[in-house]
Length: 112
DNA sequence: CGTATGACGAGCC
DNA sequence: AGGCTCGCCATAC
Image (tube, rainbow, N blue to C red; front, side, top):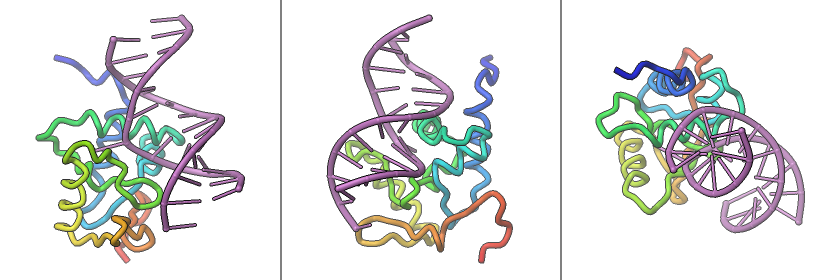
């Protein structure tokens, strides 16, 4: 069986899994939490490689502007928005999330 | 082992 | 606000 050769991917998945429902974080935060500040792009690659039946709430990760950066080519972008709204996260008409309100940091324990 | 790629981020206009 | 360029990093080939 394939063992975790990439500690990075493992750390990213774990970090995303720690994001509570109704909250969102950014790729940059995830990368930082994974121990690789600046590797936001690489963090996105990890989420992008996730299987369908994953236990990782990848939809709670958006870019620093609070917007979904998944290409419109597929349906994953619409799925992310739907899942977020289902959790109570409100998106603006431009499809942007208010990070000041829904943003979550690993350091923050309270939700308010 | 060098090149290309991408679900990013910061800077600029 | 929105759009572009450049820099960073892990992966695929």
